Length: 489
Image 1 (cartoon, rainbow, N blue to C red):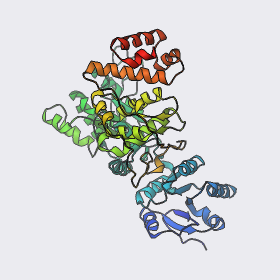
Image 2: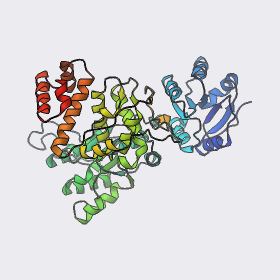
Image 3: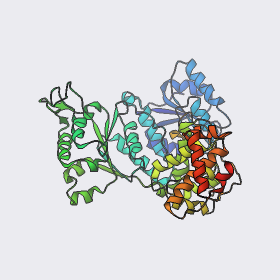
Image 4: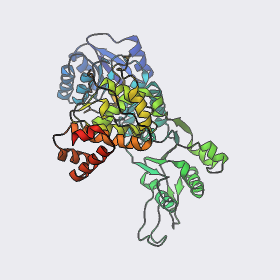
C-alpha cells in the first residue's frame, strides 16, 4: 500500500524490535517529517523511492545497516540512513558511523530538535543549501546543549550574533557552529582577531585597498569582507577595535556595501557577521570605549558561553577529544585522573584544558592517562586538587562521563574511549612559593618522562631538549634537594 501524499519529506522507520512509539512519532511530525513504519526489507524497498531518509534501529552489530545499504544501492537509490543505537552502546554507534550512516542518534532520544536538524539537512527543497553536519565539537553539559540548540536556531536566521564569554571558553568554536549549521555552510568562514592586529592594519585587512592607494600598494587587495562573500565573517575580540574603525564598520553593516581604501566604486556585500568579546561592552559604552549604535547592530542575538568550570559535563569529553585529535589510538583516562580534572577550577578554560592534555600525551607512553601525567598551569591550586579525594565520578544517567549524549556530534573515526579501574597514588609534592612550584613542575615533567622512556637520550628527545641540557637540569634539581632526581642520575 502506497503512502498518502504529503508535503513533508518521508522518513521510513525500520525497527523490528519495537513499534514506532507515540513520542517518536510526535517528535518527527513536529519536526516536519511524515513518518512511516516498515517491518521488512521488502516493505522498505517498496517505499524507498519516495523516502528522504531511512531510520534504522541497530542492536548487536551493523549487519542490518549493511543490508539496507546494499538494498538501496541495488535499487539505484542514494537514500541516507540514520541509525538509532541504545545509549550505552557507544562502540556500536562509532561502528555505524564508520560504516556510512549519515548520523547516529540515541534510541531513547525523543527530542524534536534532533529530527529538526535532519529536516534542515535533508529536505529536498533545501538541497542546494544543505548545511553541513557540525563535527568535532563537544556540547554534553546541559547548559552547553541548551546553547547548541539556540545556536542552531539562530544559524537558520541570517542575523548578526554576539558571543560573550571569558578567554579560552570556545567562542570561535561556537561561531563555526553558527556557520556550519546555516545555509551559508558552503561559503567561506573568515576570522579576524581585532586585538591581534596593529591598529593601522585592521582597516586594510577588513576593507581591502586599490592599487596605488598608499605607498607599497602595488596591486589591489580584497579585504576580509570580500573574502567572506557568501559566508561568515567572525570578528573576535571586537571590543578592542579602535573607535574610528567602529564607525566605519557600523556604516558597512548598515549599508551592506563598502569602498576599498583608495577606491571610488562600492562593492555589495553578502556576508553574515558573528562577533565575540570577553569584555563587558555595556560598561565600555559608558566609558566611551565602544559605540552604542554598533553594539545594538552586532547584538541581534547575544549568546553567553559559560566558563569551563561552570559546565563540568563538558570537561571529560573535551579532554578525550583533545587526546583523540592528535592520536587516533584508543585512550584511557583513569577515574582518578577524571576526578582531578573535574575538581580543578580551569581559570584558562578550554584552552588550558587542551594544554594539560597535550602535556599528558607527552608524558604518557602507554595511552593510559593517570594523575601523574596531569600538569596544571596553576600549581598552587593544583596542589589542593591533588590533595583532594580522587574517587571515580559517581555514575549518572549519562554514564560514563566521557560518553557524549549526542552521537551526531562524534567524528566518524572516533575510537571508543574506555574507563579502567587502577589503584594509583594521587599525592603530589606541596609547593610553598612560586619558585618552588615552578621547580616542582619541571621536576615532575622530567621524572615522569624518565620513568616512561628507556634512556636519558630518549627522554631528552621527548622533552625537546638536548641530553646535555637534561643532565644540567638534573644536576640543578639535585642542588635543590629533590631526591628523586638525584636517584635518577
